[in-house]
Length: 335
Image (cartoon, rainbow, N blue to C red):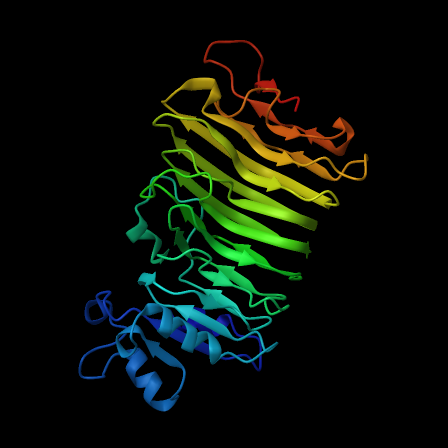
């Protein structure tokens, strides 16, 4: 593991560790009561780089202290050791080019339990991660972490412009969360530029809000995602992205998969994406290579738009057909 962490470094970056003191630290070998664990020995030689949740009032205080130790623009890594972190207070995310990383795993994790995903972060307040109303998340990387939201709350709230944000290999898990259209992974305001969200999955058993609600995304890529919705009733209005502003630009959605299982059939998931009427009438949103099961939107509602149809294009997007039917790869989504 330490060799992997060393490979994350871009000189002169440093690795800082957040340790869940309640997560089998003795058995896992990260830290031991007699301070002889490998991380204990490393910390003795490198004081100031290890933050144990047990040394702080709660997990939020520990995470904030660890984040505050990172140096701006140096690409420092905050490595989350395996565990379950519960955050009762908001975290000010205020280090440009910071890298928040957990233990690598392949996402999506089909059918895997949260424990297998190594590091779970649960928000018990809304707007858990806030950008402090400044451009303090520019070029931040977040990867290999499992997130569980508060009902009717956002996990990430980006209130101003953030450039070059990169999220990958993460999970947004709402299975244990009561249904609410206000439950979301991320809410953004202002013009968010050059963001990438790649190789992620989200899980739901009841309608929630979209993973992303964005006012004005610009040069946005959302790619290689998987949504498993085990429907227990009700209509999931927008599953992935709700664009609320009127000047979005260059939004590409690529390589997605969605499955609606059991439940109420064709109306269970209404739309993957909703787009407000745009000022421009040329293409601002392009969706390619999406595959949905029967019940994951209808053929005409994958993308719903309040404006001109020319604002959206779809390429190689198909909804499934019943086994034994003709149609090859399925029926094309038309909107």
